[in-house]
Image 1: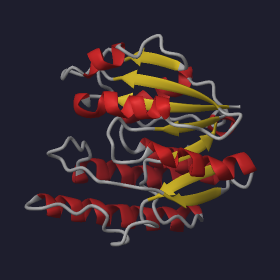
Image 2 (image 1 turned 30 degrees about the vertical axis):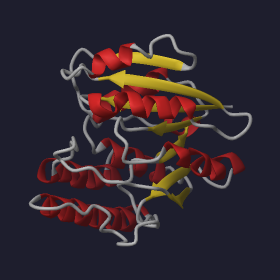
Image 3 (image 1 turned 90 degrees about the horizontal axis):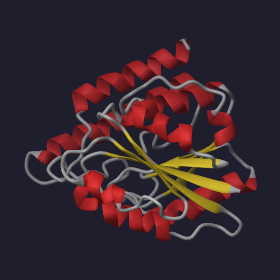
Length: 243
């Protein structure tokens, strides 16, 4: 069986090589082949040159976009090239620990669920307030934390799930399920579109605790509260009742 790791990457020169080396080196459960699909979004900070150095490495595919089109569009481009039985989307930063792949794969390999979420809430001493920054950034962190709680609760209410962290990046899927849905979102709302459509299909969800170290906007965080929050809210509502 094969595990596909899709890495949408845009303007992440500071962390790209470290992250990709970690992904390529991480051990997977016995009998599971690794496939890494890098989708480079036409970065202007030197990330593209970093990604080029991984062309031709065993198990690596590289897709170059002619312009940055958003994370959702990059994920679709990656899915079109992925051939694994299981799929994970991995950001190009170091907020999450690739060594959590194994425990996230366990319930999928055991056949007890169709989707696995890596919950940051389950491991945070501050529960949902896992982003804590100094200075003005602390307000940004608070509102992004709060948005995650509100959106997760709304999602649970509308889709009948019992998630603690619907906004986590670490989501693992069965490819056979993803092939049954059509994805439209181009931005960060793609996360909720995938989750919503799979929930409506009756897929079984499980969560596992994962490590998380938040980065601030000054360190390259791309989420913008009002812009992306509005898109996420509309996606949760839209995909519950249409499409």
